[in-house]
Image (tube, rainbow, N blue to C red; front, side):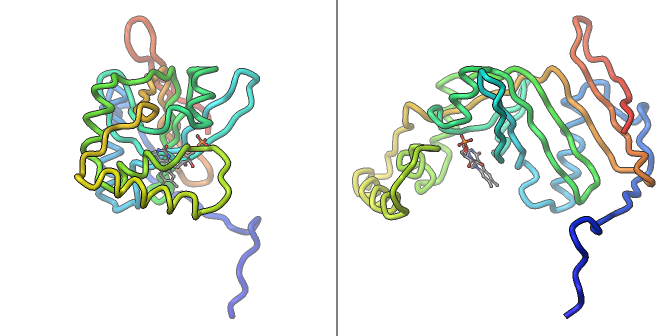
Length: 215
Ligand SMILES: Cc1cc2nc3c(=O)[nH]c(=O)nc-3n(C[C@H](O)[C@H](O)[C@H](O)COP(=O)(O)O)c2cc1C
């Protein structure tokens, strides 16, 4: 078998054409939509998968993947359990960062800002659009709590399937969406010889300011 490189030998020279500020939309959300569409068309698996970073009141940080489920005039929406570890952190410290690592395209986008719960009616609307199994799944799991075995989940899933056999699965109270209201959005694109392009949009009283950052 061919010998595989060591981790420290994994090296790739990015080679995208330089990104000019004039090619960027003055609105970062519009720019995000352009890059998101390109990621989707390129066939990236789960282009809406993003790393969500949160921290508790003591500054202890954690991150995990969640799926972007909407973009609106306020910001970037995802759904989760309101009693999970991330939800507890958001309660203590309502700020978060999101990272889209579209590595195949030599791109990443980082979004940081305040986190707000979305309206209960919006969470309900999205919940009801989910497949039966996912709606049941939201009831089964007390996300982030310790459980004894996988059996616990499977048994509870079966019980709930019987309980909601008519297909009417209500939304659990502790399940819903959050919106990350962006204060900064950074677009990164790989360039040759580590001369990558980075543009940081920062929200100001008069709109969005764009700065080029050193790679
Ligand atoms: C591809 C992928 C997508 C995921 N999407 C979600 C999601 O949209 N919402 C969610 O609560 N967890 C999602 N998860 C699970 C989370 O990464 C995480 O395990 C869970 O939310 C518990 O996180 P916490 O203990 O930090 O609260 C996803 C995981 C993966 C790998």
